[in-house]
Amino acid sequence: MSAPCRPHDARLAAHGAEDRFVSTEPNDLLAANRAWAGATEAREPGFFTRLARQQSPRYMWIGCADSRVPANELVSLLPGELFVHRNVANVVVHSDLNALSTVQFAVEHLKVAHIIVVGHYGCAGVRAAMRDLRVGLADNWLRHVQDVRLRHREQLDALPPERQEDVLCEMNVIEQAGNVARSTVLQDAWARGQKLAVHGWVYGLRDGLLKDLGVTMDGPQAVLEVPAAALRRCACAGAGQEPQ
Ligand code: ZN
Image (cartoon, rainbow, N blue to C red):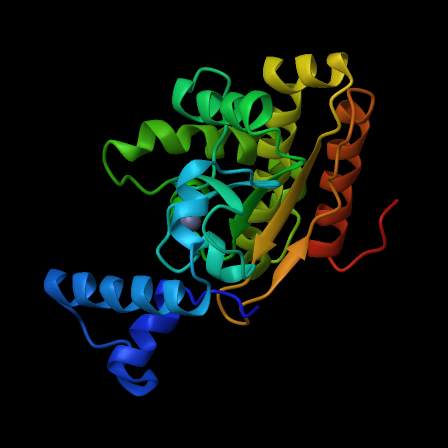
């Protein structure tokens, strides 16, 4: 059984790989969608009717809204295999009912086994927080990333200027993964004995590769120590030193 193709594949087939950066109109998207749906159903008859009955993804992805970081495509997962929440700079705060509701649904109803917070280098939100840029309403949202920067200002200031933004991208992922793990949703799930791990990854726009930041937490005992150790490691690596 061959895997159903993704919308991206269908669009490449429709337009040709060489002109995929040519801007399209909404009608082109609808045509690409029809091609994708037809090709997917032809390759795997019944794909959509089975998917319509239920979703049972093993993974939840919490990522940045940036258009260059499309969750399913980066990890070659099909519809139904990845539950996704995205916002500017992949932030998870304990007062954000939108993010927390998706985490709760993923944990309690879909029973995902892994929640992965994914940041990316070159993140405009992180850059704005790093450089104190005013971008508008989002300043209030990015305040959370600035809080990360302020908490680790000493380590960040000690880095070469060209490394500071990348390291803040990594620190932001680690802090947000910690926020997921400390949420009541995760704490309650672990107290019930549910098997569930939180991870932190960062994506490279220049090479298309995901990097594991070593902040995997699979129980309440990991929540305090693992993020702190990961933060130390990324500060040391940013400075070109061995972790202490
Ligand atoms: Zn971003």
